[in-house]
Image 1 (cartoon, rainbow, N blue to C red):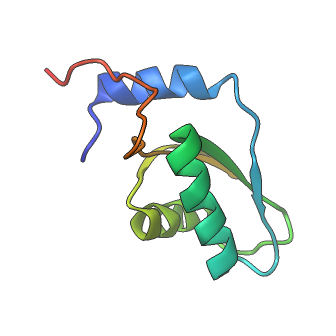
Image 2: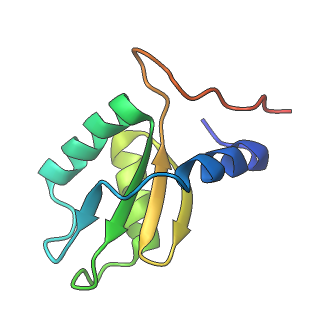
Length: 100
């Protein structure tokens, strides 16, 4: 599912209120972090992730890899933080604007 610019803007506005719940450090992406992010996306739908200074990977590349592994969408990458969105399979909470 690709997001329209209107939907992306809506998700960005929602993400301003949330704090990062995961930090990726020098061990970079591990399977346990990927699984935890997948679980959080199912519960929260919108997740903010912080990349620590001791992680030498590019945040844009990390965002793309995590999105691919969790079947999520990258909403935004700003500096060392990125936001992912995936609608919940069981109980969707976030209602996106219509894609026109």
